[in-house]
Length: 280
Image 1 (cartoon, rainbow, N blue to C red):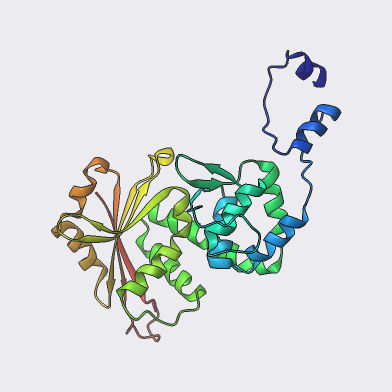
Image 2: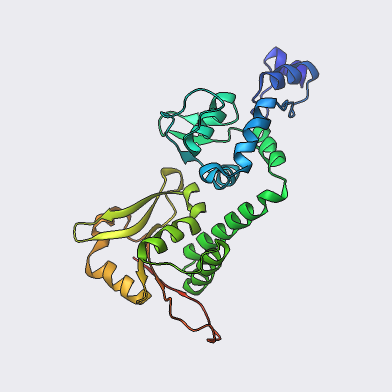
């Protein structure tokens, strides 16, 4: 195969390789595999990731699952010491070659399997267990939503709430923040819009599918605090929120989620959250 590559006559499968060392070693040995060298720079950076700097661990979990994240690189100071947030650390990873960057969409991503293997190696510690468990829960929540399983959605939202360690919410804004965290895995497929202006009101959270995943349904989520999930659905229809999403008609899931802070723990079906899902 090496001779065929060198002569330009090989037309079989192609494999992406990343680091210059990998290119040299592959051409020298005729074997395409990972030749990535660990660096002190990455070990230093891994400390920031392990400390969950500004939600960085959740971001890494999403990237390792093949997702992309929109970031702002403008605040990065081009050094290893000045960080104002998660995006600065991710910007440094771009400069070091550990992340790819799409200039058109301002998104970062893990460019190939070679670097993905490095991320897997660096996230094997026990301190990553909770992060990956929360991400797995978020993926299950997304699947249940797509399947229209409202009871399962309510159950998983409840689990996400308990996993976060919160005892209760104080208002609908706190509920909204918690729901966004619970649906973190959706960032792989969607762009989320909070308080979408529909002309007759504001939809709490709307997930619009990215062009790459245009087959996925729009998720229009309306939240209620100490009321009723059906009231949320009625509000979506009464206020005609769907008119703003006319382009997606037939592929929209409207989701009402309510949090009842007064539900009794003696109830055999004890659950603070309830959910209703309809297709539109």
